Figure 1 (cartoon, rainbow over the protein chains, first blue to last red):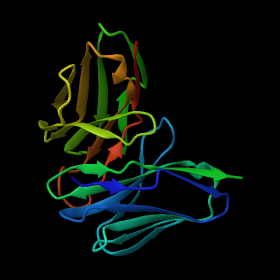
Figure 2 (spheres, rainbow over the protein chains, first blue to last red):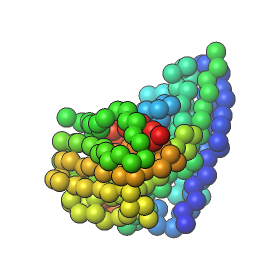
Figure 3 (cartoon, rainbow over the protein chains, first blue to last red):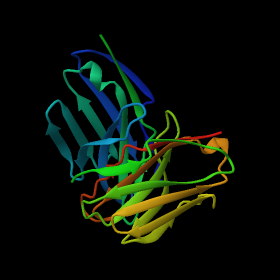
Figure 4 (cartoon, rainbow over the protein chains, first blue to last red):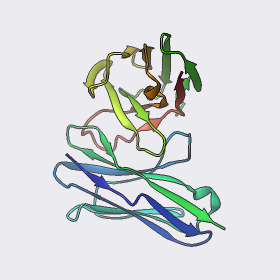
Length: 109
Length: 116
């Protein structure tokens, strides 16, 4: 299988920086996506990485190391509205997305 | 139009009822998906349609029956469901299925289904 691991829960303070890690099996890797999902709502696309390195998009950045099977999502200047689940999803060649278990982030005042 | 529209948003049905969930997109996406999501869990893939043909059925019970009338529409017909089928049902679409480039998913807002 393509086990994807993420921390189950994280807590951070408003205004701080938080890093959410994701590890995955590398064989057949063809892209990694991060999604944000507020409770009871649909996942929304945050970022896409297929090459090594950092992709920055406003307060959010995503990093990928293909050789290590590792990615992280970095959230800066945390706001209360960032409290949500963050899903790491990996696409493998010839297959559809495999979602990780998701990380529930709580931002405290 | 950059959305996936799902109806209804909420549905309560009895175990003997027959109902349908609907999904629509007008982005020209050729792959459409049904996912089931229980609380505090990631989405679980149920079905994949690629170019209007069912390409993946993830061992879903026959009480769930998908249908793709055309490239813009995807239905999920429900019959004789069990209370444990209560969940958020998400529809998604993408430009292509499988390994083609950067084909991220666009998700609909989901149908919250309760089986009583």
